[in-house]
Image 1 (cartoon, rainbow over the protein chains, first blue to last red):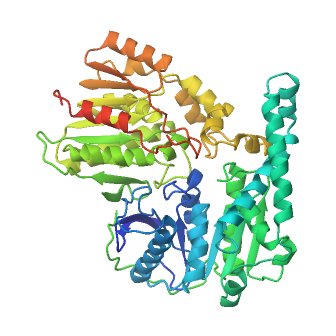
Image 2: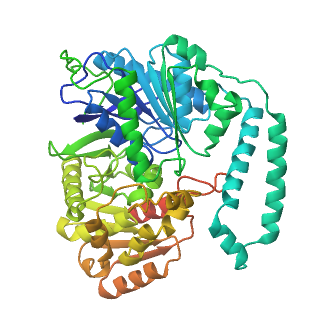
Image 3: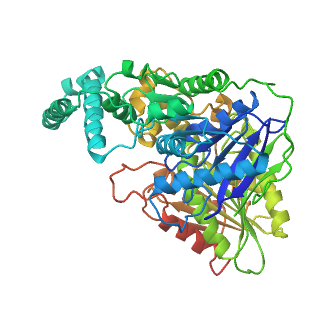
Length: 306
Length: 265
């Protein structure tokens, strides 16, 4: 495995690290792009992106992790546009850069939270995307209206409140007089009311959004959610029930129980590493040593090699 | 900025060099020492800003990731001595780039403690800025292990992690017990008797242990400046809807840059 620092970008300099197998890019496998999880710089929450990038080299996969403008080591861009639109533009610049550098033609964006939303938007807009790994995305199955987001947020709050009711430590605090009973009562009434209004407002039919179109294009999707995450609530708002996703053969849904939004427990990180490697092997047909036609990396325009 | 890797072939460290944007005489370099674990992630952007401010005052600046952290080699923080060696490598790298032996160090939290403990072996060191240094090792380790720290770092996460039985050392990162033991044996003041010409202790948390440390330091050596100000710690996430939710602690950064560029610089 070898790594080098790169600087690229058409609008403003974007800083990243390319991680590749010792033999270099194999000429076939899609290149992974790691997209910032919110404001966390390119190493990912708990360094997840670094670990994954290095694991992927074991099956011959090259990757680029980089910082969007204004995040991590990349300076703020002067270009206009909403941050998610700019993110998609900069992810396209990353694909262009890797395409020029090593000759890669296909890509797999991987993101967590906001990074997952950009990965999904990229998959829907650029034909070079062969697959995407979406961890706690909130934009699947389509770009949501504000109304939908608000509804799902209420649902997520109600879910969270339900789990609090089942928390014996919380009841211990109540029974020992260490909780604000008046506040709990107000909160319970408010959230129950919201949840009831939300359930009444749900549409009856399933809406798979852009997923069928991606399926027709042959784009493989691995969607991973933490149980109770807002993104999962948003997904279920549209698809209504998981069974409605069964018609999609290229959409793999995994739900991790008892973890948080950024997959903090170590066991969760280990599990997602195994999951991604398995998905790469089964869905993208990437196996270690699949090609003996390694492409030497000879030219990397706009980069600084460390 | 200039990102690059340095070190040996098998042990490559990631660094970012900020060349000075103005001439300064005499030329000098500053190595920024990151804090540890989740504090590292939250301070990254502030360090970028700090490096830019210092480069704007004529300093050569190097930020770098310790082994097992960030983009550097290694699977996780494991060897207590490795980070000290990493810092020595980084200072050598910066001295070569700057073309000058003049060196200063700035560290935040455990990064400050590391800089203080390694500085005696890096002589000469002009200035040493200790930003909210970890001076009570056992308490710091206890915070990490007991989740008290995690509860403030990762709002809403503590209960889920506890439910999962995942009492990860270091919260989300696999930290070797030897490293925690090493941290718990910290005794900075003794190490700082004669390690740098001038020392700044910046306390932004009204910490009693930091105040005691600074007082003790002032008793055993000259040229110690203590600066106290009140600012939200950048290593603890604010609530999203808090209007004071700023990623970069400008007052702290300015205090450090002013001290670095003061009349005795």
